Length: 344
Image 1 (tube, rainbow, N blue to C red):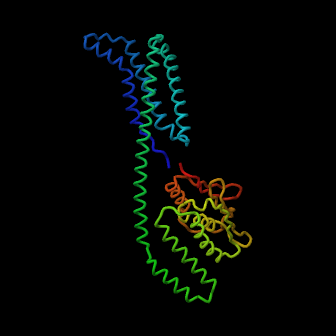
Image 2 (image 1 turned 45 degrees about the horizontal axis):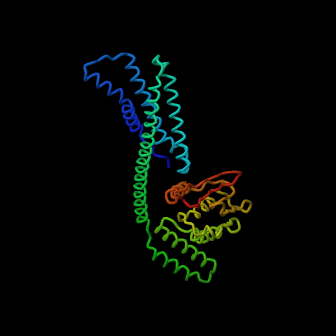
Image 3 (image 1 turned 120 degrees about the vertical axis):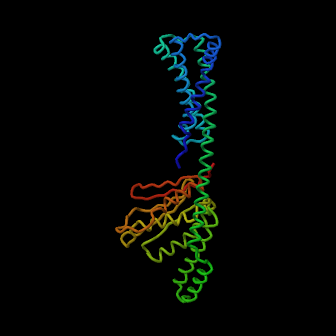
């Protein structure tokens, strides 16, 4: 999800206010002139005031933009690394601004900056930097809080929409299970058909239960996947196989329900499954993640579908685990990585 940026209008208003405050000594001097009836505005004085005001505004805008937007939108670093980089970047901008100010002053105003003004300039800009650093952090926190509030509202709306859709498509579970039990009694003598119906019943029960929670254990997901792949093998026989190698330590980790099933189904839908080209799906754990991989052999005929399955899984994974799926296509292998490392 793209980071919500602090509005430029907000940054510009604050930068302008800080620039005016930085020019306060000049403002006080102007007030004293007006109050004493002395209106001796020289061109040099006006140019010097405008120069300082514009420079202070530019410096304030750059520091606020760095600490409120750029430092968060461009790179995804840990909090500690980000703070170190931001501090160094702020100091770099400060040094560059002071150097540029002293270089342009004689060029634009035709006067050298005095030692007294140079010391006052450093004092003013250091204080500006400190104030802007914290203001930028506050603006960033406010934007993040607003983004989180909007995201939670979207989740509530999606949850209500999903509940409504579930109600529209709901079938009485008792009726379906009773029907499956009746079918089992009719085909009791056919062991293979009976097993098929039991697997189908287990799948339906798991799907119903998965709607009660956002996450399920990898162990429970694998149990469901075993029932699903049994149905697939019933259709494709030896042309379809699945190899699962997941370490026991990962079985207690929690993932969105039907995540592995969707990836296996995706492989079945989009790849040729024949005697010449059987489909093998590999599911294994490695370095804190679960990988689902298969060789890419596109079907000759396209399979109808919403094409939203993988996109939906990415979104669910991001919202529920605050982590991102990684999809790769390399050397004729389609691979999806589901990170399971602890979210800090």
